[in-house]
Image (cartoon, rainbow, N blue to C red):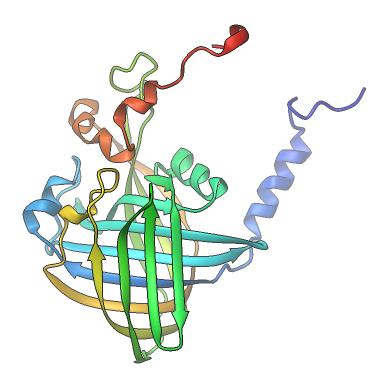
Length: 267
């Protein structure tokens, strides 16, 4: 009998998948990173419990491109500084991705707020332009001029906070209690350059990052980096406390109910 591809995979198939994942080569991306001080009240408002504001009200945007196994991938992250107990890290509000493959794993496994979008990093001589665009709106643009090489930093461990949840089938709350995820990345850099430039935030009803203005720009850099990623669930989160923040994940919170019955009896 011919094998049916929607049928169960064998133990050997599953083991081979795990093995190939364990020996992934280093994937180096070229990315622009900008960090600035923003309005403390605005940063505090976007942090769901149990996250709290960090000592400094910072915003970080990371806009990168990489050739991933022969296919171009653009990846972005717009995050605010946050504190969880003794841990200081970043809470991303939106993470545009240019491919479905990059989006699915992050959302379903880690709870990352990934959405399909357009991500671009352009370099022409010493001029740099990096953008995040969705629904025809370039809601983040970083532009500037490269001013020189920076010392290559030592490898560093970075921490992101994600909230993983599953909206309830009846549209009321969640099917299971949400969880807070600590995602640790060990980052290595092989080239880093300073950029003298500016960050432009444009109004978008779908990605309202303009509410987190640039009060004082701290740095813009462009570099070549690679990192691994490991996540762990650190605690259950109050569903009632998280509900007011669910809209952060969707362009329209009601879209989780946009699955009408299919013609022909599909449900």
